[in-house]
Length: 231
Ligand SMILES: *Cc1c(COP(=O)(O)O)cnc(C)c1O
Image (cartoon, rainbow, N blue to C red):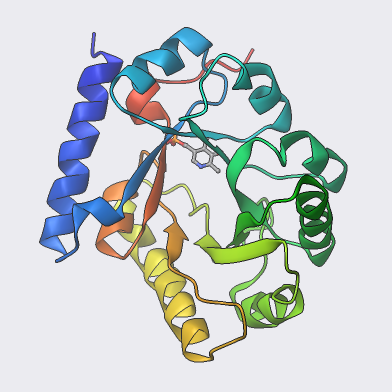
């Protein structure tokens, strides 16, 4: 059986390879271990391999697991976030990847202010416009950013997307290219307070392609921990 350690080593090699292949510095790519449904002991195995970025998609799971880990761990909220739950994680997460409404951005700003932090966020983009997915449409990103850029306790660091599930990961290359182009285009507009350098895209199935197209944060679960059992 493949071990978590072997899996992580293999993924790191692939990240390195894909970065170099596309003339990128592997250092600018962060591997986020997606630990949803995984028990703390499995997560600790990953942490023992110098993984410090952990991704969870539920507020409740971060709350449950948080105290089992030290302050060196960087928690990423990668799933849909309800406004009434922001207060439970504002003191815990380094990055919220799933901001997709003005109401949510407003709430994060308020809670961050109360807590005395500036919260790094990403805008979730539903690039393929699948109605099963959260996120805002590509054509609405600029307006959305202009709306929330004045909020002083959030910092818009970049964009995130969950690409469609495809048999052949090459099919998502066009999705990743579009994401990168949106960032380039918006940075050119010099919106006050906005300079985006983070691109959260690529999962087990397609992270190699995502890196070739500019991902700086890849969110990988299954390739590290194996298949999840949803009970
Ligand atoms: C579960 C999840 C992942 C990881 O998916 P894998 O295919 O297991 O790598 C990445 N991003 C989000 C938002 C997720 O919910």
